[in-house]
Image (tube, rainbow, N blue to C red; front, side, top):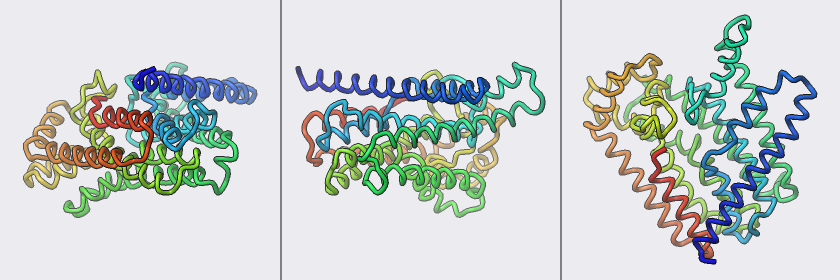
Length: 364
């Protein structure tokens, strides 16, 4: 079997194993929750729907971190870790959509919107939007709890005080901190020094997204397999800039992406008021009048197509889009250079290279 075929088979088998683990786990938990009340079923259905499909980027980074450190193909420890990461991501997405007031996720209604629609369809009392937000917050909390349960099932390799447990705990704490910095910048950004906006935006993407998308999952897999400190440092040198390139690309797609590909309305990030690196560059490099225009329009839910096109024009004309693309290239180059010197066998190195290439050049 060629390396390419081995990679395809092994990766396909792992993704299928993670899907099966998630199905079994949530089936068991659904039985437990149904004993409380059948009314809980929409919460469980929302979680199951969200963890079905997706790119499985975090689970795959964990897997190849495990394999690169000598872990056996398809071992239950890494499959369980991949499931825990998928549940954690689902919890983060549920809460993120509430915070960002985003009504869509992967081309369909976000979880809080599903609950609002349930309220409306049943003709229940009081405010459907408030119910939707409250129910989704609880769904996200439940999903976060399930992530912890799943990770604990790994056993001794994930026990308290282990390297893997420390990474998993740090990952979750950093995402919460990064999320807070994000919402803080939305409200405080217009009153802060614009000269520091790019630096603040980069810090936000590092802790809110980059570390938990690539760096921590890769290190987690390595730690579970007993990787030495030197290899874990090498993993970080590769995965952190990769994660930053991943999020910068996401920010570009949030303004310029095709809704049919991204699954979100055009310019959704602008309506949500996200002060990304792309926007920070625009505010810094555009004319005072253009910067004021962006500040006045950013975060308005009723932002029209004409205003979105004008902001896009400003971003392009002032060089903000080009500056962001340069950063993506720089981070991508740093990631690939770090990967080249990682002391890995050929199969995990090829797998990580393909993941990195897909991450940097993606269109959705």
